[in-house]
Length: 267
Ligand SMILES: Cc1cc2nc3c(=O)[nH]c(=O)nc-3n(C[C@H](O)[C@H](O)[C@H](O)COP(=O)(O)OP(=O)(O)OC[C@H]3O[C@@H](n4cnc5c(N)ncnc54)[C@H](O)[C@@H]3O)c2cc1C
Image 1 (cartoon, helix red, strand yellow):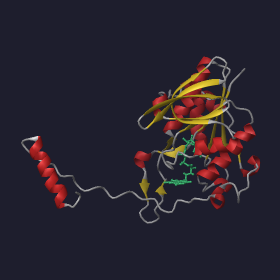
Image 2 (cartoon, protein in one colour):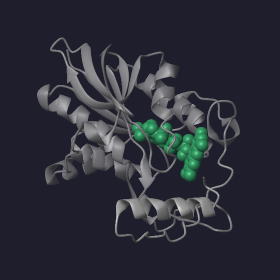
Image 3 (cartoon, protein in one colour):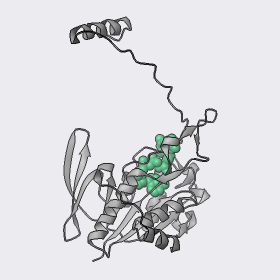
Image 4 (spheres, protein in one colour):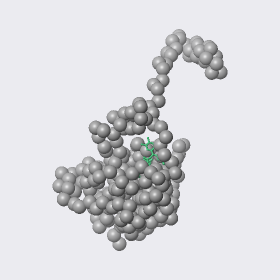
């Protein structure tokens, strides 16, 4: 039985270079390089590791974004994914997480069969970590988030994952079809290969719009359908310089610290 895996991947601005327009309070995207979201590279890598073991596994990478998100899909195929599908349409623009997961669920339903859906835990621009879990809810399949280890039984149905918690781990058994969201500890994403780049550039990338997906641009996707909107984005003002306490002993340092904190009415 050939496994069918879908990977949700988002093209995001390289955040090290992100600037915020001080007047409009929006991200300045012009001239900012776009990259494959980090956690999504881990999601894809885990799918590729399964394909390494079972070569007839089929991996489809899906993304919702502007036309240039095709470049990211080419990158994913150059890493080893079989195909990429782009959901792109003006009607999808301005979608919040709810509307984004509506669109991506519709893409997955149009694809039809799948065993595992991998997503990243979080996108580095929106940063909400909501889209993967929302897709699972909408498709009515079980999910495990924050996956840090993955193991699949030979029956290709039973999966055991280690899920990271703030102060430890959970080991969870889950069956396909399911949604798993990846974090960076899961693996080290591979690089594209030269042969992979050549092959990927030859492939057609279907683009599906709202009509193809059968989604309502007023009630299900896009800005108007989104219950949340980004009201304001800003860079927090840098913190002031810290105070270095100099002392000959720990006791003296603690005393000086207490005096400082009391003077500022912190304690
Ligand atoms: C600064 C900023 C703040 C925002 N704040 C909010 C907010 O508070 N609430 C809100 O609803 N929206 C918000 N948005 C909008 C947000 O960018 C979109 O909703 C976005 O399409 C999905 O949310 P996310 O980036 O938080 O994804 P996350 O939920 O963090 O992404 C988790 C995973 O889902 C998958 N995924 C997410 N988006 C896509 C995609 N387009 N294509 C394929 N896979 C995808 C990826 O695997 C990703 O790793 C914000 C956007 C910005 C730029």
